[in-house]
Amino acid sequence: MWERTLVVNGFSKAFAMTGWRLGYLAGPPHFEQACGKIQSQATSGASSISQKAGVAALGLGYAGEAVSVYLRQFHFQDTVISQASTVTVGVRMFVVTALFY
Image 1: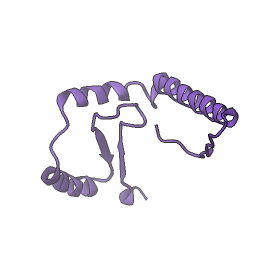
Image 2: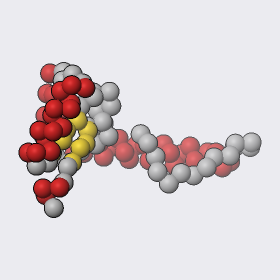
Image 3: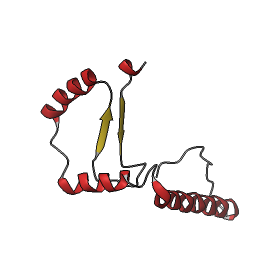
Image 4: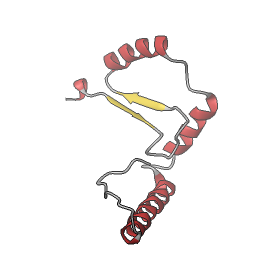
């Protein structure tokens, strides 16, 4: 299975680094080489400060406690707004099952 697996991800969601435009790819060498050829002709490299920030984020482990704090706050805000809309005359809000932060 490994020889057919390609992981492509970014830092924006997992590490709350929106706007940094930093991502990564992991897979077998033949996939990585092919993707490298395409990427080198399509985009420029990530800035050095973005790369250093990414390395620091990876040092946190899986998103670290900092991102968990953000997520708890976002969920709290969603709950407050949802509850407030139920008592506000003339306002109707749909409860969503997934959120984009």
